[in-house]
Length: 149
Length: 149
Image 1 (cartoon, rainbow over the protein chains, first blue to last red):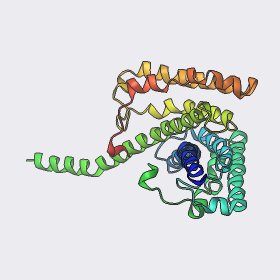
Image 2: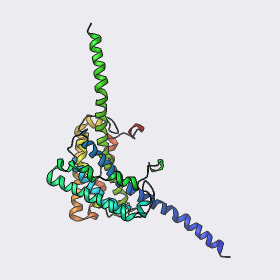
Image 3: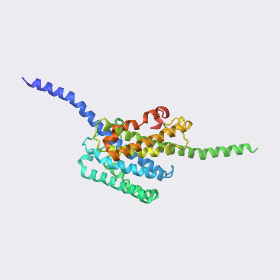
Image 4: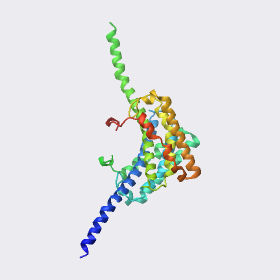
């Protein structure tokens, strides 16, 4: 006779806590998207400088911002919350994903160091080799859906 | 009798150089939007930390990224190219606009200094006072149009 009572508790539990869990998931996804969008925006700004369509006054700042943001990215993917543009392989291939993300952070930090010590021209000369965005996106990022807008 | 000849030259000139001028304008607008979008993404990430929905591990990095990006923003608005979300008042009120943008850079640099010297809790305690985004957007930013997507 207790089964209906337990079931009601289960339903109440799900009704109360599931929306909270969903809100948390959205926060986690939003957070990592803010970080990855920052990398995208700064890489695009740097791309405009590299293609000489805008002046290069801010080049070092962009490289520093990319290095800084790359250093924050892995932490944002640590919660195993699939969704947004992240493919589930981010977590099923975590050793490879985290290795690539750490390499991005290290390489861009090195570029920022070169910019500081040798100037922007030296840093810009091989920055494209340090920005491994596409090779990683090809494996771990899915196309944006309308619901991600 | 030379008028038609001159007119043809004028048309040819416009046909050849106008698309280039437009492309340049788009580059200028895109560039400043990359910078302002970066500020928006990093402020949103910081907002999630402030509302405690994500951990604060990256708080100092976000403050540094905002300070760094704020320091690049004014340069991106120097070319007088209305368009995107920038209202024409950016340039007609340039002394006020540039003063506000410089203040944002100074205030966020100060927050980054506090974070470095006194830690993230001290920096986070009054970061909202330093981020004057809305008061400036209310005056100088127009709503996003579909063509800006």
